[in-house]
Length: 142
Ligand code: AMP
Ligand code: ZN
Image (tube, rainbow, N blue to C red; front, side, top):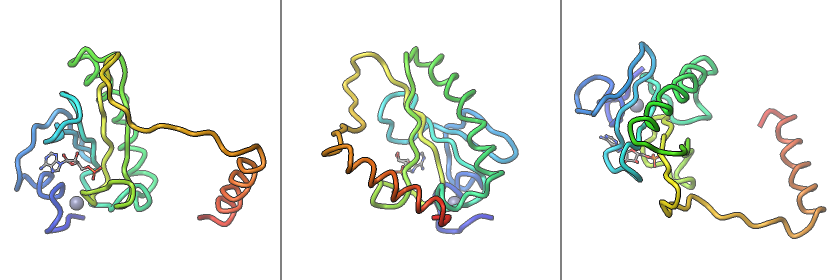
């Protein structure tokens, strides 16, 4: 259930401190130690799973169920007008701690945070081809 070398497992076990804001039998939420904005919270399953792809459905469901109430509390406590929920999966996506977690990032009008910038597909055929590739992968189960 826990991994000895995992920083979030150590937090769950009480071997490392955290600023806890919410807890159930299965889920823990605490302040990110290096917040993108004050009130930036991490929500984790207490059990060790590497990331989104390794989360059993029930565990993911309980994690997801916590996002709305904890996110609403983060907004209320910070006076935020919005909230980003982000889950980084694998190093290429910026995952640094390999224990599944969701970031709750309170947002304010004009705060200047830019999470990503989008660009349209080259043309409709390129979008169609991409949609078909993803549909095929979904049909294969991956
Ligand atoms: P990610 O890039 O999605 O893996 O994010 C990992 C996050 O964990 C970063 O935002 C870190 O600031 C945060 N973090 C790492 N160690 C701790 C810790 N001991 N307590 C709280 N947050 C942490
Ligand atoms: Zn862990």
